[in-house]
Length: 455
Image (cartoon, rainbow, N blue to C red):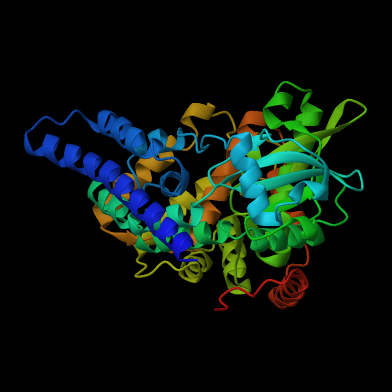
């Protein structure tokens, strides 16, 4: 036990100093260049920051990417540089995988599988996925966490304050301290694969009856806190269907819309990481007809009151009710609201919710080139926030905003043409906060999850 504790402490210390050296080196470069009048411009600084964090891989880089999705938390040059980073760590070799599997399931772990591919089928920031076959013949996906990830996360989070200090220097109009707390909480949750198993069971219940969305089942006997075994769902990458007929692309986009907005509107739950890699497409008779929803590490459960605030914001914007919009921002957690600040926040809200307010068939960008989508709105928000002064971004905002941007990116790639307003209204049919609260409580209890806000 003492050796294990020493190893964890050593790993955490090594990570701590690596993070400090990288981020500190960037901070020194930034400060020194500005002091000497050698400022190479934000593009040059952004590239240096991306290199510093990208070399570390793992949790801190993931946190930086999350920060980059908050509107105007970073200058656009920094946000683009961080968003372009790849969060995949080098895969574990076969010998390492054997040791890790033995640590999770015991020295005879192989007896639990009819087959197990030691080479990963996919890799991510915290772990990698191996394809296997169960003793009953079922195809399995085994998600195995990299070693020392708990130490890496804690060391990286200890240095997140340094990243936030850089953020404050670069964009003082935005106070992202609460957002940093949200990011830290979600990263710690992602380490717990038992919790992710509960998330998967929750989604299987919430999306039951949808034939266009598949959710994998959980194999508890082959899962631990750092190993999660799910059904293997056959599918192909979303990008493989971007040139498919429009009807197929629209079906895939509609399934993605439903997989995100339906759980939110009915249960107050969102998938906080809706990027293209977390979906695959399944076909019937050669045609793309639906999606497999993958990876349940980053799931956010909101209070019914917050869900009501989102719906109120939507309806306030839809009907031109400024009073309801202002109240919705207050429910979201924005403080010290003035008429000017409400107008600034409304500008961004109209961009995020715009497709839901427009009762017609359209693309998500509606004639704007994908590369320019949202840029003018972001620039205007930044300009006005600078005039207004520091604005505290509430923690509940982080994953709502990130998910909206992620969904928009998927719809842009698919060039889908849908009536997003009608789809959203269908999700809100018979919306009632008391009903949502009761439904949420029952679903969370069945999945073994605590209600939002519980200690």
